[in-house]
Length: 220
Image 1 (cartoon, one colour):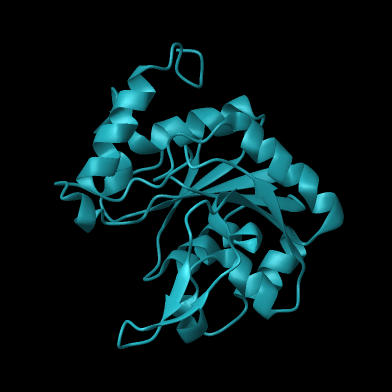
Image 2 (cartoon, one colour; image 1 turned 45 degrees about the vertical axis):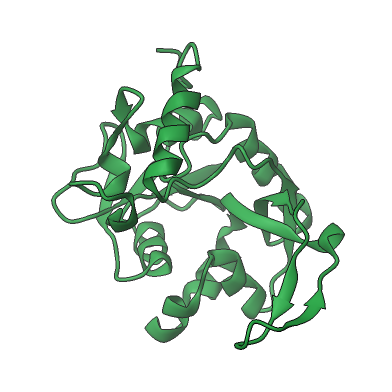
């Protein structure tokens, strides 16, 4: 049994929208509805949404106000969730997620405390100092660009989130908090198609791709 936490509390400032990003209409529906439909298609019925001020959770979902940081929003949503032993965290700003990615991430918890969707890096990646002088070329065969969903054993996520607000503010994802607490994390291969909508260009690309879907993830 698993519960899903849908993180939708971001302002969307870089998108240039007039309302919080997850609630901007994308391909005919609020952006978060695409992720919610994929969650439902994956069989995840209990969903807690971390919300920005002034917005309400979609029908059939519980809602909590988001925190000052992303991981604080996750902590608040987890506190409002039922007692499921497995937890899936997903960013509402990744509306092209496939339902199978949720189930594969949950299946991977049989061998780790946390499983993260990720796309293998294909570009050459170099490390440089403050002066922009290259100091190393990294082995890209070992590098992964991390996405959501991220699946967790509940106890491991609770331990990881039981830290000060300063640590939560430093977290770029919740899997890092699990690593920091000594937990094990595995990668679940994904593709760059599961990208995060951040800029107006991202939005336009997502709009085109989602309009090609027939039917939408929930069958409507």
